[in-house]
Image (cartoon, rainbow, N blue to C red; front, side, top):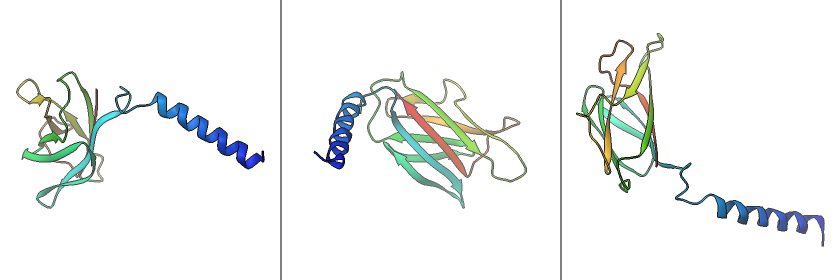
Length: 130
């Protein structure tokens, strides 16, 4: 058996092992993610997985709807926003409290400036794990 054939067989075996370890239900894989921003008067979704839509509810408030709902509301999410200027201002993504919806079908987040006032961002990245 040639070296090329042996390497090919080894790569195939390694691939089969990894395939068996990391399945779609693995808790370390993101269940949903989206990169979006608000610019020129509309929400622009640049890339997404398992996200049906992003809706701007008001300045700095967004509703993210999942294509496939989560099993329950025990999911974890993390988000970050980018400043809309080059002056070093910061944007934070958060949930304000129980008034903001977090349900199996999606969630609402806010984006704020460093002073805490609601502010839109040209880029928000959100990842959901469960």
